Amino acid sequence: MASFVGTYMEREAQDLLVENMSKNLADADEYPALMDIHARCISMIANMWHPQPGEHPIGTATTGSSEAIQLGGLAMKRRWQEKRKAEGKDASKPNIIMGANAQVALLKFARYFDVEARILDVCEESHYRLDPKEVKKNVDENTIGIFVILGSTYTGHYEPVEEISNILDEVEKEHGWDIPIHVDGASGGFIAPFTHAGAGGPKWDFNLPRVHSINVSGHKFGLVYVGLGWVIWRDRQYLPKDLIFQLHYLGGTEESFALNFSRPGLQVIGQYYNIIRLGFDGYREVMENCLRNARLLSKALERTGWYVCVSDIHRKKGEYEFRGVGGVQPYHEGETSADYNEGLPVVAFRFSDQFKNDFPDVKQESISLLLRAKQYIIPITERVMASEPIDLAALQGKPTSLARRQGKPEAKPLKKVTRAKAGEGTHHPMAKGGHRSVC
Ligand SMILES: *Cc1c(COP(=O)(O)O)cnc(C)c1O
Image (cartoon, rainbow, N blue to C red):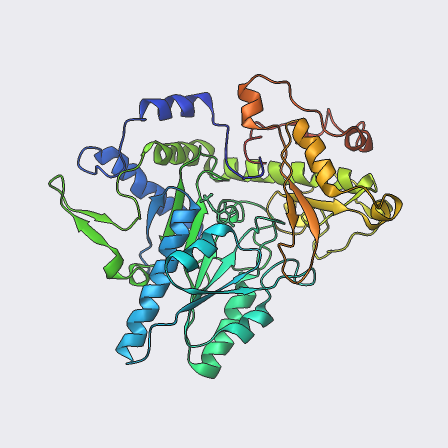
């Protein structure tokens, strides 16, 4: 919980993983079937993100999105350096742009690989997302690329990839700088392709020529156990040759462009299992169900009058404001995520103004602490959004896996919350579904 990472797989999948615990993803000659499975996963995931005719996507499994992001960033840095050198220009001061809501992996890239991080404020107005206008003000000839987050870790909002891409088109027209986008789809990369809501705007993936690479965490909404990410470039030309190593350790020739050499291969098998087992419709069902659960929780929280959600996936499409307890929309049979704002199945909430007025001494930390005692870990996020000192809590659901392993009973949600939705629980479609792992 609160880390988005899967803790549940089907028993058959689990058996398969245990059988393959000894396989090393680096040993292509010893495990050719594993290599085929890896190649098929890359192909299917790449296709999910719409490469264009004539392009040849290339990618690799990683240990998570963190490694995938380092690789995506490195490719952008290296291409920028090569271009600057070819033009006889200074290539010593690269910078990269991202929002203040960036996950630590993005900041690590900048610090570990000597790239200046230009971290732009996000605010309520921009729905806690990277603001395209700010992007325009902050790019220059040394900008190697923009990290655009499809699914903010803090509020679940998708950043507007297409709008940012359009702004970069304007920048190119004005200044001649061709600035690429790497989409951090750690969570959203496996959600937006399947949900009815999509990514909001019509385009976010390889449909946009500026999106050179995308990463996703297989161990988040790919529904695999921890230890798996993917990075994919839309075409070989966007992965500089300099980053690809040709290895001949075991006889055959193998290309390597991940940070790790040896690593477990079992998660890749888990990913293949899930893709084959669930298919498009299966992933769609899981993701729609996660979103339904998140909407139910959001609405229940807002109906107490104590809380207001900072996330917007439970508000009708285009609405971004809390309209009072009476304004919370009831559930209607047959509705899908298409009726609501797009985003991750994340519920981020804070005390309502009314509550703060009535109980000025109660701190959000106290709620978090009390819930922790019940095995719910609800992070308190203060001042994430640099321009806006806001105190919010993000909640993603069920008891911790540790509690389940220890056989502790499931913690009951706050009484107030259950009461607010009394009568809806048993026959409600949200009661179904065995994928508590991720939401
Ligand atoms: C989780 C997350 C990451 C890091 O991914 P890992 O798979 O945990 O390495 C990066 N960016 C975003 C937006 C994330 O949600």
